[in-house]
Amino acid sequence: MVQELLTAAAAVGSAGVLYVAAAARVVRQYERGVVFRLGRLAGEVRGPGFTMIVPFVDRLHKVNLQIVTLPVPAQEGITRDNVTVRVDAVVYFKVVDAANALVRVEDYRFAVSQMAQTSLRSIIGKSDLDDLLSDREKLNQGLELMIDSPAVGWGVQIDRVEIKDVSLPDTMKRSMARQAEADRERRARVINADAELQASKVLAEAAREMSETPAALQLRLLQTVVAVAAEKNSTLVLPFPVELLRFLEKAQEHPVDHSAGHPVER
Image (tube, rainbow, N blue to C red; front, side):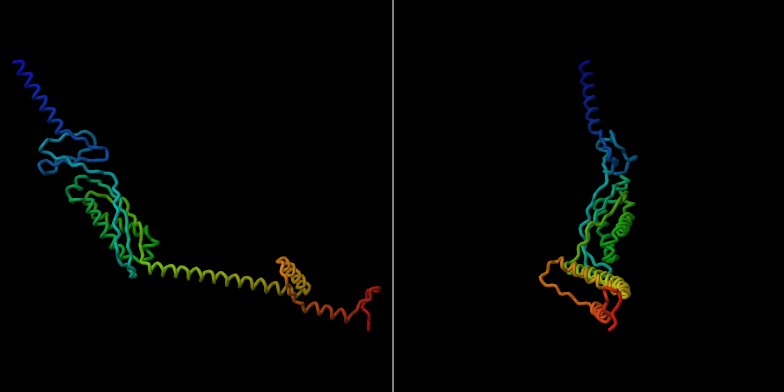
């Protein structure tokens, strides 16, 4: 009798151990457990830690709540100003409602990927080339809004969308390079012309000052000779100032008596 009781207890214990082993589940911190009982959603979403289900009746699906980095394949399209471009992007999203992510959509990752590709092509068609190259922050916000609107019903939240690269045809790259070069040349010419204008105003003012004092022109000539001589040239061409001839002419017309210090009358 005792032997039979011990055998029955051992059988019950073994059955209990097997039941616990079949029913026990562990949900990680970054996961949530969704239980389906005979195909229907049962109870609340299970939080992280140890949990139990009914073996052969319940099925536990674990949903990852971590942020997912989803690259969007490059999409080719024509911009609003008729330029063919290829644009790729990356989407950051996470599941905020584990039950809806399993019930409302078959595969939320694939759904977000397809929605991102469709939205990216739509953004390309609505934007100009300059916007794609310089105003990406605004395009990122518009792209995020387009993806997030349907994703809310799937239990998915779009965290961030970034346009990674914009590929242009080689002919367009050469055209943009020529345009940038022409613009830099235009600015260089404007700067040179402005410098010439400022220099001419300063030179005109200097000429007026020298016209009042003829000796200043002679001093400027000597400074020019010193500057040219510093170059160690073999030949030096020195202009002869007309003011010096006039000075010599006046000196001959009015010779000076060095003993008296007065001009001598002829």
